[in-house]
Image (cartoon, rainbow, N blue to C red; front, top):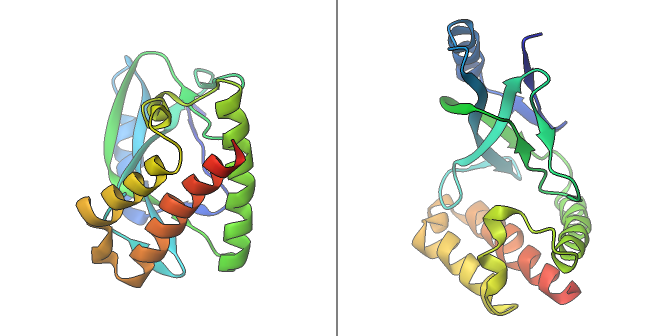
Length: 177
């Protein structure tokens, strides 16, 4: 096909995004090589609408033009040359595994991210974060997500999301470094 869409096994497109993809790709200018999509998260069956939403991520690109940065064990950063546009509708990251398995999966992610940081392979978006003192940066990140950006508006699932994905995960990385 002319375009490639990269999705994880626990991700899916919402009907509105499917319609937008069909319409907009058929009329996409030749100088546009990538499409940034908005990702929403569902944790424990509840949508996380505040705090971290939307996560804007390049996931749709002209076939043959996308590649991943070398040396990344996770936080794959898709590289696509040329112009990119952002679509309006969302796709969903919907974890269906039990929460204890979700935490174990994230312990593995933390190990990989700690290894990347120690080897100097930090995602461009995280370089500033890692300049701050260990553990303090994890607490600050949680406070920003949960209080400043409104994660508390998600109720208990918002606390769970920001605590575990924001504070606990980041703290775990710092403990491993």
